[in-house]
Image (cartoon, rainbow, N blue to C red; front, side):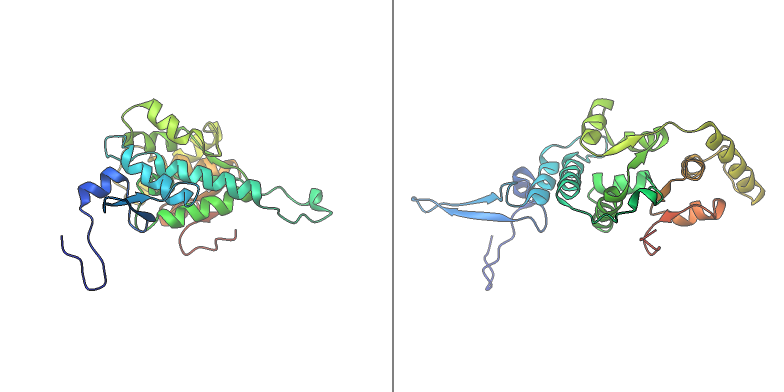
Length: 238
């Protein structure tokens, strides 16, 4: 390896993965008495989110290699924000309608699990913002769409255990509404011969009066035009 004129050197990928050094992670240098220079990741107490995300590289799980360190980092970040924030409450707040809970689509959680370079930060920010206002909700279909990224159910449960996610069953009325959405889809020359998971997820949000956090807004808006959707480019204050 050669040091550039700016004092930079590329750390080999194998070394970065073994040490849990991710892009933009913080490191410290230690010069020992014998002249050796040791590079260490910054402890979690200094950079909790990045350090926990680094653990994702050291604790790989699932058929696609997506570990759970990043989602645990999100959990810690959410808990910290929610416990330290002091929202101002109006004296007559009890007369105002309760904030609308949010159904979290699987693609948002997959962004976080996979540490998606384009969407992970957006997804984390939205989960933080909406989670401070009202509960975050998932249903069995969303859980099912996450499962292929884990080798066993225990790994998935461990990854989600620290997140402030409430689990709700699919309402019976949502099942009927999903079927009606599928009928519209078929009448519009849709090729699938059975209802898509998106139909059930969108119907659940509509029937239960939940907003939906997703990156696939057009698929939902087409069949559920009255559904409150938070997505990139939408009115994210809804």
